[in-house]
Image 1 (cartoon, rainbow, N blue to C red):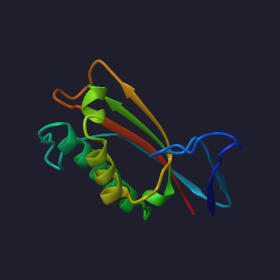
Image 2: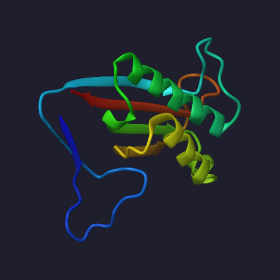
Image 3: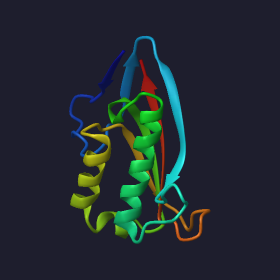
Length: 132
């Protein structure tokens, strides 16, 4: 299986995501439901960065359960209740991503929402991965 980012001539290279990925070869698809920043006992981490890191850890755990890694992510949608909390420390956001999922840059959308279903949740991450 081969996953290649697409970048039309003249387009600026995106930072921290890809505009499009072309997947070739035999594969399976893994769809992850939205993961929030809580642990296995459903306790939310304290603050945006801690919830971001825990949500990423939950994504990584589901990938591992399927025998996958962050390198096989092809699409991620992030829902945040406060985009300024996300933007406030992009260096820490990126460091947590790299620590949990590596240096993979799937297609990504980030949306600010009024609220999330779980009371106190500040971030929710859903993802799709393509596995060989």
